[in-house]
Length: 137
Image 1 (cartoon, rainbow, N blue to C red):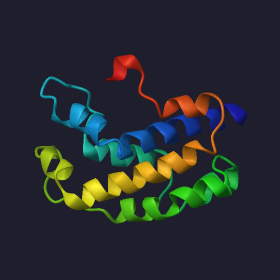
Image 2 (image 1 turned 180 degrees about the horizontal axis):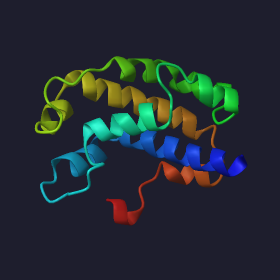
Image 3 (image 1 turned 180 degrees about the vertical axis):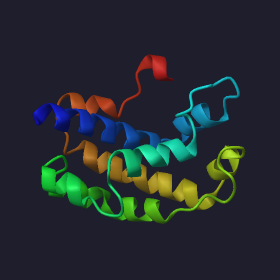
């Protein structure tokens, strides 16, 4: 059970990092040579909401102890706003429309602020997940 929790949390923290880092998004979404199918808005959102089973509330992760109440508290508002965000245009062919959308920029900034608060609650290796490794730049 603890191994599942560690893996889940690692994926969760990586998904938060991806959704709150506009520069990372620019590099991934706008690079015409990037063939990684994960490197797009839809995949980032899917990994966070669907793959992690978050839905509109953190019910299962909180119940399973994957996320603590104080961790959820710093993400709650951002999470709800993220779930309500709709891209201004087809995300597959026009990612720059998202990156230039004032609503997205504001949401990513709010997420970064929440992520920074979450960082204060994390310990050890989990803190490192929020920092890009050299090869990811």
